[in-house]
Amino acid sequence: MVQSMKPTHSIEIKELLQLADRTIKTVKGQYLFQEGEHAEELYLIISGKVQISKISKDGRELALRICGDNDICGELTLFTHAPRYLLSALILEEGEVAAIKKDVIEREIFQNSALAFEFMKWMSDHFRKTQTKFRDLVLNGKKGALYSTLIRMTNSYGIKKSDGILIDLPLTNQELGNFCGTSRESTNRMLNELKREGIISIKKSKITVHNLKFLKEEIGCENCPATYCSIE
Amino acid sequence: MVQSMKPTHSIEIKELLQLADRTIKTVKGQYLFQEGEHAEELYLIISGKVQISKISKDGRELALRICGDNDICGELTLFTHAPRYLLSALILEEGEVAAIKKDVIEREIFQNSALAFEFMKWMSDHFRKTQTKFRDLVLNGKKGALYSTLIRMTNSYGIKKSDGILIDLPLTNQELGNFCGTSRESTNRMLNELKREGIISIKKSKITVHNLKFLKEEIGCENCPATYCSIE
DNA sequence: TTTGAAATGTGAAGATCTTCACATCTTATA
DNA sequence: TATAAGATGTGAAGATCTTCACATTTCAAA
View 1 (cartoon, rainbow over the protein chains, first blue to last red):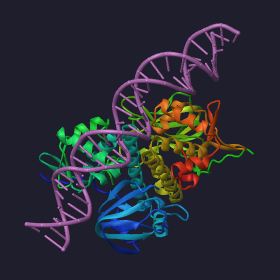
View 2: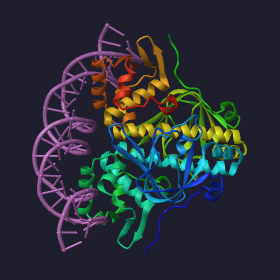
View 3: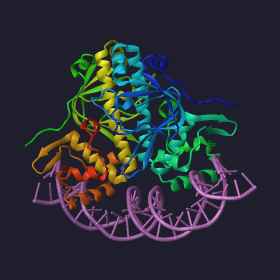
View 4: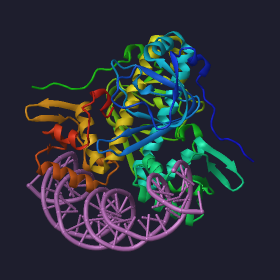
C-alpha cells in the first residue's frame, strides 16, 4: 500500500501559469529570494522544493514551510506598496519555478473574480495553518513544536506504509529543529525518546511515524483536516 | 501632546455594514462565539472590544488579538465548507457588533471586485502580523514574546505622551501573559525588571513605554510599519 | 576502499520558565 | 471606611531547554 496523502490544491495553476513572466531553473542551495530584497514577483513552483524561512539577526533560522509542486511563495508581499520580502526562499531540490509580476497578478485578481475567490480561499487555508502551528509552538513547548511539525509533515509528505506513515523528505536533526525553534541537540534527544518508545523510526534521514495518535494526543490536536495541519 | 497612533483601516466598513444581517449588543464577559461552534457568520465590531483567543485543552489561554472599532473577527472560517470557529471571542468591553452571514459576504466578495481586493489586502496584512509575531515568540523566548507584545500594543492602543507611549488598555499580568504564552509570575518578573530599568512604568493597570527602542532592539525588530506589527 | 566531512549521540553545566506557596497591595462595594 | 476579592510581588524548587564539549557513526567522493 503506497498512497500519497498530499491534499489537492484549489488554485487553478494553469490559469496562473499563463500570467508568468518567465520560468527559472532553480539550483539547490541557492536562494529564490531573500528577506529584505525588493519584492516584485511571486513564484509558482513547477518542480523541485523550496524552503521558506526567517533568519534571525544572530543567524538562527526559523523554517516555516516547504513548497513543492504547484505551491505559491512570495505571496506575503501582495497588496503592499513598495514591498520587500519578509522571508527567504532556499532551494532544497532543484527544479523549475514560474515568476509572476506582482502587478500582473494583482490586476488579474481584480478582474477575474473566480481567481480572486480561489486565491482568497488559499490565503485563508494558509492562514489557518499558521495559526494552528502557532498555537502548538506557544502552548505546548518544544515537544509540542516537534510533535506538531511531525504531524504536519505526515500530512504534507506522508506516504502510507504497512507499519505507519513515511515522511518522504530527508531531514537532518538541525533542519527539523529549525522548524520547531529548537536546538539540534534537543531535537535529537526528543527524537531518540520517540524512537525508544516505538512512536517513530528513522531510516536514511527519513522518519516513519508508527503512532500518529500518540503525537496528536500529546498536543491536544482535534484531528483537524489536513488542510489546516500541514507544513505547506 | 495626545495623538492616537492607530493605523487607519482599509476595508470599506460602510459597504460591509450594508450586508449585515443584524446587530448585537455585546455584554462584557460573554462570548461572541466559541471555538467548536458552527460558524455561519462573521462579525464587524461597531463599538466595544473583543478579545480573540485559543483555549487549550488544559484550560490555558493563548490570546491572539483584541479587536476594536471597525475590526472584523470570525473571518478564519470563510471559504470553508461547514466550518466551525477555531478561536473564541470574548467581550472585553461592551458595545455593538454587526453580524454578516458567511454566504452573503462570500457572494458579495465574488461579485464586487473592489471589495474582494480590499478584503485580500486586509487578510494579507493580517497574515503578516501573525507571521512576525510568530517569529518573535519562537525565536526570542518569553522575553521576546513579551517585548513583541508590548511593541504591538503601542501600535494598536498607544497614545503619545510627553514621557513615552501609553498603552490605553487596562491589562492584568495574567492577561498580558496570555498574549505571550507565559505564566502570570514570569510576566510579573519581566515587567518589574523593565520597570527597574526605566523602560516602562505602570499606573492603574496601564503600561507606559518610555524606551520603545530598547524593546525593539532586544528582539531585532526591523522597525517594520505598524501595519505588520500590531495586535489587531 | 580509504578518508574527510557531515551528522548523530550524549553527559554535564547553566540559563530560562513554571509552579507552588504565601505575603502584600489595590480596588470596588457594602 | 471596613472588608473581601482580585491583583501583584517574590522566594524556592523543579522542569525544560540550551550550550559546550567531545565521542561515535554515516556517507559521499577521491
